[in-house]
Length: 490
Image (cartoon, rainbow, N blue to C red):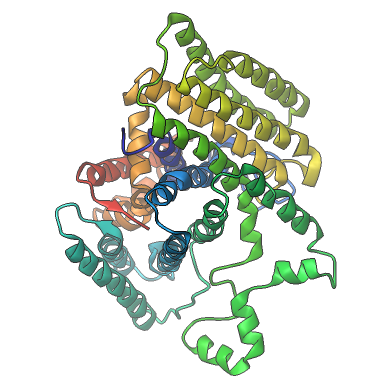
């Protein structure tokens, strides 16, 4: 049996690809090339603008992939007899590592220095990447004890860089300054994982979390209610309010108890993506554990799978187009029609492979149609502020893409099409930091950064070319680490 589920890596890799590309393109392109709420001409955040673009899909894809991975990473431990207490320690430790990573990224990124600082910030970025490599990498050619020593040294080195930055450039350390994406992942890595650990065979119990949290989300603005008190509760803030002297002591070392250092209830809204991901992950893991081949190769089956793959791509594109252009009735008709056709194409379950695709398709149809029903709520689908429609539509599209990857990669074995994303998905955190901490510093020292940043002056779509150059180099760097089995474990 294979050691990894390639469809999860592909979805995760596609998310990282999209994150890096969206963060690397320049201004001057059409509005659908940016976040729907932060688009041209002024690129100012406009929360009342409904719609989504491809950029708004990348974070949900990553979150859904996180949920998909829980049965593989945690389920295997349960099967080996590891008790839940040890698993809880494991997920808490993972969350702490991600929190450290989030704070380190915010403090060491070259984008977070005053403008007048030149080459030192780019050198600091390269040093930080080296520190991250030491701290997070599992070195395949070294013993476990040697790897642990290097990892520990890496944490101290990154911490020393943060201290040096604070002293050398007079930029105070602040624990509440963090990379928001990684901090959200840290919260999901512990809270969503705990939910899966205690509901590994009970989808119904797991799903009850969603309406309960939805109720809290609806009622938390009621003044004087326990709902509001629970929503606004943050452990560190509570500690600071109880012991003011401790607040002052922590503030002296950069920990402001009035700010969010790790947890805030609003982060838990991403349960609406991660928990649907865990259900699809349970289905995938059951198939993965029991089946080695990709099912029947009958010509009629091949035709149905080709049609399903094409319809899934059309469904993603038409949803993005319809919600962005506000063709709401047309998008409703598209979602109903394509969902029905996909149901008819995938309902014949001849083997474990087709059975798994059918089960994931049913859930994906449910989430997509639920999100379509919710679209009129909260002023239309939006990533920021995230709406209920956004959570469910993106969960449905994520599930359909898993089916697409299974068909193309596992059934038809067209690995070359998907392999670049699979490779990124195997080492996603390297891809996440590569642009800011390796590629752009190297461009600076090679005196190419100014040219890259002005490419859109020579042509509108050269701003996209700039993004493709950066993203392509990221892919090469990640592929290099994967080939040498240097995986970061955050």
